[in-house]
Image (cartoon, rainbow, N blue to C red; front, side, top):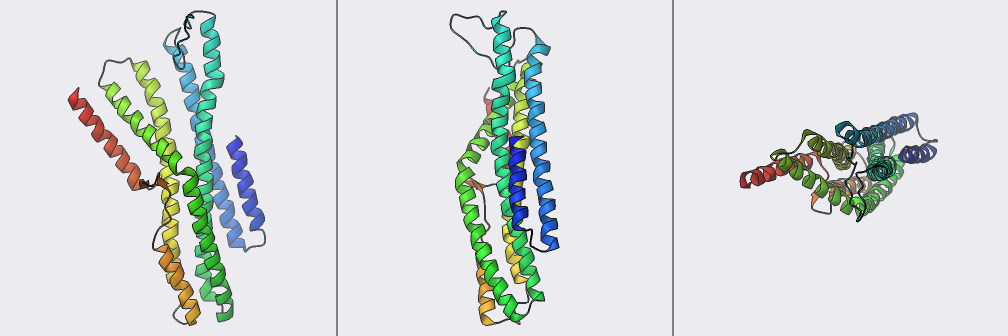
Length: 289
């Protein structure tokens, strides 16, 4: 819920910035705000369903099971009334805090990456409108576009520095969970234990998919800036205008990428590769058992 408020606050700040802009920009902002809130709602309800599942499955299986197994020296946590106290603490405090903290990180990334994507789409709109301006107006607008592009590049660098290592931890834990659960599936484990382990893995997979999806869109829109700049009526413009267009196109040839600790970019191709590598690793482990 806090992240939803942050999303609305950020969107409200963008709305205040664009309140004097044209109707198309305001409509794009409204649509973009709805997209942010929709994905934030999706991750929120996904986490709520995951917490509910983790909390109820110990009760549904057998009495004495905990949400997360603990061992306190000298105390049997599986006997009443200690069991009820520990279970209530895990069910209503520990599990929700852990899940919602992770959701906060994911939603924060989605919000900031989505803002960058929106700014690049707005830059493309400005470039597409250059053909409708006279030479003097086009000169002023292209200078503003260059300043906006530089700001977006700096924003992407800050975003990369903020989330790159956290993204690496997310990918590492996801790959580890996949390998672990696939190995468990080849052993003699109860169905309840398998469900308890698979459910968090699927949750993390869904949230990780969102990270890679938004990172992929971020990178794609940075490349689309070059296409928008090239499609302007730059041939009949002044030499200075042509140099400005060339500057934007040259810089946009290298996509703005959000990465996993600098190793791999957050793209859907990399996400699919992670799934394939995890399964290949599982096949190697299974053959060695």
